[in-house]
Structure formats: structure tokens, C-alpha cells
Amino acid sequence: MTPVTLPKVVIFDLGKVLVDFDYAIAVRRIAARGRITPEELGRLISAAPLLLRYEMGFLTSEEFYREVCAATGYRGDLEEFSLAFGDIFVPIEPMVTLHSSVRQRGIPTFILSNTNDLAVRHIRRSYPFFNQFDGYILSYEHGVMKPEAKIYEVAEKVCGRSGAEILYIDDRPENIAPAADRGWQVILQESPDRTIAAVNQLGLLGDGDR
Image (cartoon, rainbow, N blue to C red; front, side, top):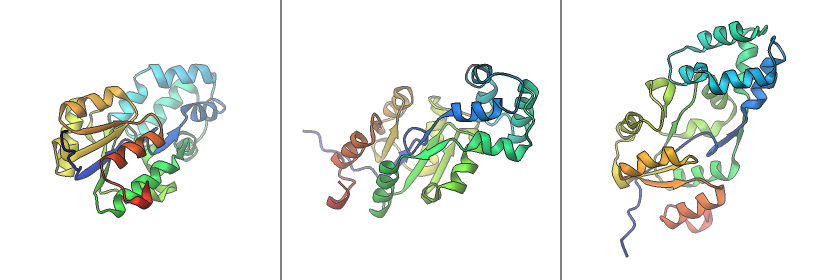
């Protein structure tokens, strides 16, 4: 049997791993203050390059807001928009607890996420656990998104580790694959229970955390 390498750092995805989210909530709020239907706004956010440009850091939050206003007739100010767009997250408590357990064992932790400034501002302000990581690799700060290779290179530089020294947890197979190609240990999150069991198998949890 091949011996298991104990990871030296753990990197977590954010959305659907540590926090759940529903963009439909933002769509309904913003559409209610504009001139287009929620369905039309949903297509604008999901299909058009607007959100992609924002999460790549090519637009500031103010520019993103202005473009949404121009496309939708949204009548709220930037503060109202920020709350409508950002307040769509709910912590996945078993994963938040898992992160705390890993930290208590002295293992550095990081977040690697395709995300945007408004989302991060809201999560940082609302959920204290978010501020307890050793570092953050966020798409909008680096101009690159998963699954492009460059963002994994950035993550290695930020955490100072490479290969099997890194454990990475993500809910999307296409984001897991490039990490595995770099020799990282990976866990595809299908449910918190399965993720916690997989982390336990690697020896990262004490008896009280299992």
C-alpha cells in the first residue's frame, strides 16, 4: 500500500464548499427595482460576459453596478445594490467546523475561489470564519479563474507549498482536475459528510473531530 502523504496545507474552494449561495435571490431583488424580468436578468448574469468580466477583475464594483443599471434600469443606489447582490450566501456549517478543526491542529488554510469583490466584502463582514484563513487566492484579484493553470500557480506561491503537500477541496470536477495534474491531493465535495470522511482518512482530524 502506498503511504499517504500528510498535507501541509489545506486549500478550500468557497462557493458550495464553505458557503452555499443562490444567485436567483439577487436576480429577484435587482429585477424588482428595474425594467426587465427576473428571467431576462438571470440570462444577463449567467450567459453574458458581464459577471465573468467582474469576477476576472476587469470591472470594479462601481463599474459593474453602472453596467447592470444601464442594462436593467435598476433604480437603487450602489449601497442597495451591494446588499442585493452580495447577501445571497449561507455558511455550510459542517464545513466551517471542519475548517476550524484543521486550524486547531496547526495546519495552515487558504481559500481559492472564482468570486467577486461584492461577494467577498459581504462574506467577510457577515461571517467571522472567513477571516481565519492564512491567505486568499481570489479570481478578481489576479485576473484569472479556475480551471486555468495560472491561478493554481498563484496558489502555490501564496501558500509556499506544492504537489502532495497541498490538499484541495472543490465541488467542481473541472476545477479539481488541474490541481490533481499538479500533484495536489484533492477531494471532490459531493456532500460535507463525504468530505469530512475523506479528510479524516488523510489523518488531519483528531478523534474528537471525526
